[in-house]
Image (cartoon, rainbow, N blue to C red; front, side):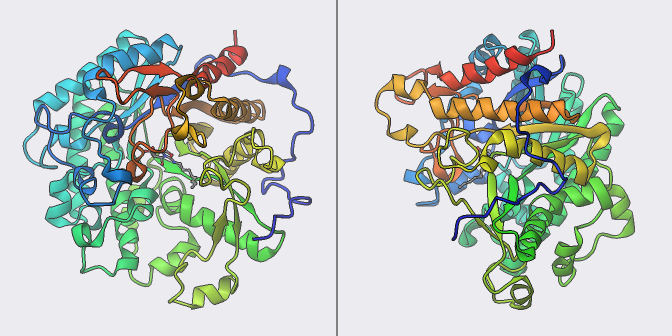
Length: 503
Ligand code: LGS
């Protein structure tokens, strides 16, 4: 792939690259959420305790080779038992918001049916502990750990049966915790659990739906489940409660100035962000370019469904880690679209992480990457992406939340000296540049509600097991008490905030 020509690149919203940074005009509003995030299966452990039922991840981690070294979340950070320490430690750093997910299988061990009171008691105490420490809890209902029974009963998200079961689970959670939890995310990154994270065929696939179409059945059911849960949540909890889903995706830069690459970028946004954001924020249905393909096999949303779906988010919660280059397939977009055997169909865009390969791509977005062009610096792409979201999906009251961002420092897992792990310079630079990117967006008038750093501790990075570490705290996995230690990046994250918080 040739290096991109960035010389005459301009942002789609006409935004110019700031030549000089006017730090004096930067500030975080007083009510900015300085947050951290985690998710149940990645941190809790205790997978067989207190009546929890199995989730698909308990089974996936038993599929030989599915995770690195067959690592599992059986113990993880043992946060199920150590949550009080974990909350105390984030509060001590000055964090004001904690984003966690509920394990559906702790509330409904069978996915549906009998409720497990121990699960409700647990999350009640997590929430109460947050409040006792002046930390605001925000809750994600579904962060990929589907109760195994629902997968085996009807194929999980591939079946429309999931909608009612999800809404029942959401209902129970809203009723149990809604008096204290004022921000809810229904689904975490639906594109990832529908498309990017294929479940092994032999275990989970529904063979009555052609393989290539399965992500879109999942997506259809996910949108409906979200919309129904949203409507229910708002009617139960009222307007002071904010509900949305967590979308995800980085800033997309065309590799060249060709119109084909510009089209590839647009198609990528349609697929990656628009698949869920267009129906929920704009139209009640898919973006046109996606719809051209989906309408060949998927029932379109009825007009009643469109009315149900449209307008079911109170903020745009976006997980954005990086910027990436996009370009048209070699054959061109038209030829790609006409070629149904093409593995890229229906996307017809390619993506590349041109500059950093040493770490498998995670480094993209770091200001510290000496080889990164200016456009890769978080101070440039973060505000550009936030403007793009604001201009394209016009969230209510302009509310945008960076609901995940973070950095897996290259080579961290190979460091043998603990002090080297704890002085994580590159991750620190990433956090600083990212927060400055948010400050720039704020100074340009965007309503960025807060930032939730992923993650407050090293944890199970899904199929990567414990070999990819996103934590701002190290966990000593060899110590019996799984001791946590702050890394320098945690201080850096908080320091930028302290430096610019309105007095
Ligand atoms: O742990 C997950 C984090 C880590 O990085 C979390 O459960 C997810 O919600 C979220 O997807 N997470 C995440 N996303 C980063 C995507 C970065 C894209 C760059 C990939 C380069 C190979």
